[in-house]
Image 1: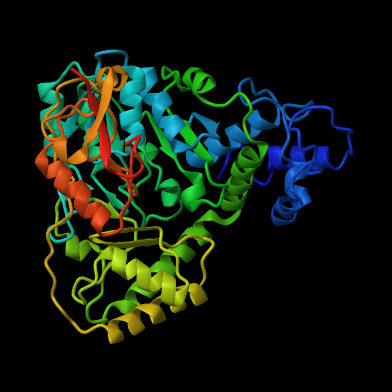
Image 2: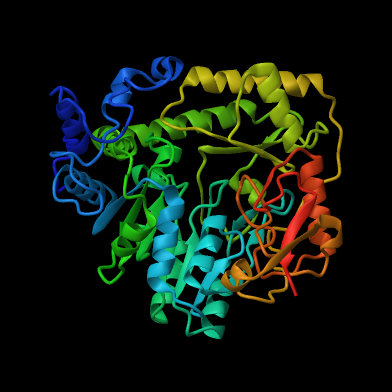
Length: 484
C-alpha cells in the first residue's frame, strides 16, 4: 500500500536511542533533562518527557535542513497522505497557512477566500500585503452557521477577478461541513488559479470513504492539517502537504517557524503517522461507529438535536464529518453556552466549543463507547430536567456578513491607531481584529468599517459568555481604530 516502511518511526526511534545514551548535557534546553525545573512541574510532566525535549544534537537532524530522521519522518508522512512533500509544523496550522499564502501572494495580489476563513488566513493577508476577494458562505437555515460555499459563487469570483493569484478554501468547516471542493478546484484550474486548503479539521478524512474527500484527492496544490486535532499528535503540531513542486512553502516556513522547534511536537507527529499507518482504516471506521451510534441513541430526545445532513438542507453541502457533534438545546430554552455549562458543571464533560447556536464536541480515536454513553446519558437527563420551551432563534451574527473595506488588512494593521470606546466606534476603520473565539472567524478585520451592527454582535456574544480575541483591550471596553 505504501512506498515507504510505514512500520518505522525514524524520529521517535532516534529520540529514544539518544535519550538512553546518557550524554552529559552542556547544551540547550537549560532544564538539562528535567533536572532544573520546579518539582511539581517535573512530577506532572515526567522525566521521560524532559529527556527527549532536546535540541539539534548529532543524530537528531535539523528541521530547517533535514537530512536524517526528520527528513525520513516527513517523507513517510507525505507517502501516507498521498503528497509529494510534507513539512512538520511546530507553530500549528497557522504557520502553514501563512507560508502558503505568502508563497503565492505579494503586496496587492488578489486572493479569493470564503468570509468564514480562520483568522490565520486573515493574518496571512497582513503578512503578505494581499488583497482579499471574499465569497459569502451559505448558512444553515436555522443555526446560521456556515455550511460551505456555492460552486457558482466561486466561479463568479474567478470570472470577476481573473488576475487572482490563488483561491483559499476551508475544508471542512469547524463543524465538519464540506463544499464540493473537487468541482471548485476544476473551475480554478481551468482559469490557471492555484487552490490551497485549510484542512485543519480534516486530517482523518484519508481513512474512510464515509468522510468528506481529502483535499489533496480533490486536486488542491497544498493543504494544511491540524494533526493535534484529530490524529493524536501534541497540541500545536501540524502538517503541511504539497503536490506542487513550484510552491515554495519550505522557504517561507524556514522564516516563519521557530529555529528551535520542539522535538516533542515533531516526535508526536512521527508517532501519530505510524499509529494511523498501522491500522488507519480500522481506526477511521471505529470513530465513525462511535459517532453514528451516539447519534442514533439521542435521535429521539425531545428538545435536543444534532447537526446532520437532513437538517442542513443545502445543495452546497458535499460532505459532513459525522465525528463532529454539534448539539443544540434551543427547544429546551438553552443556548449553546447554557448547554455547555450543564454538561461541564453537572457531568464533567468538556466540549470543544460553545456558541449561542450550539455546543460542539469531537469524537476521536481517543474516545470509547463508555465516554459516548456518558454523554448520551447526560443529555437524556438534561432533556428530562428542562421543559420543552421554544426560544427565539436569531443567529448572534451573520457569518456571511462582509463589512465595508476601506483599507487592505496589511495597510490598516500597520497604520497609526487610537483606542476609543467600543460604543463610539461605529463608522471607524478597525485597526485590529474583532474575532469571536472559537471558532476564530473574524467579525471585523483590520481595514474594515465597524458598524452599529458589529457593536451589537460584540455585546451579545459577551452577554452570553463568549470570548472575543483581537482587541488589545481584554476588558472589551475599547477597540483600536485607524487614526486620522
